[in-house]
Image (cartoon, rainbow, N blue to C red; front, side, top):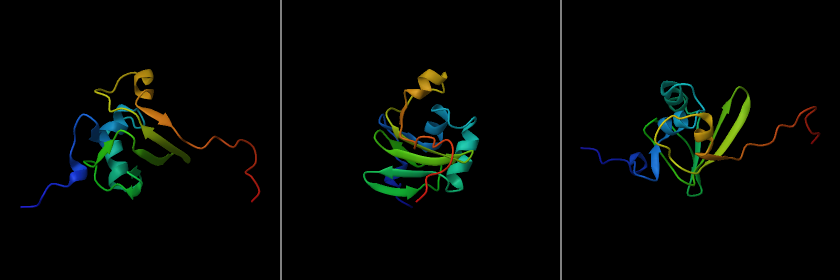
Length: 111
């Protein structure tokens, strides 16, 4: 019998990544969030280690950073709390700190 993966464990300071993304209102449905995770489109930084998530059952913890692209825009957030439901936008916004790069507007910088 396989041992449970410690990253799959969920407690008061952690949640399944697909559920957290849905609670935080990044995706309209939990199924869409799970699909993005399954396609390895979500990156997670946990305790200084960055990984591409591959299973929706993986856990996200308070303090983790989550990064993904929606509509061609990079979204990077730090998890602040888990949330108990998919509430209104104001409640969802309290679940994370936005670390996304600011919109450049106009022409891109010349490197």
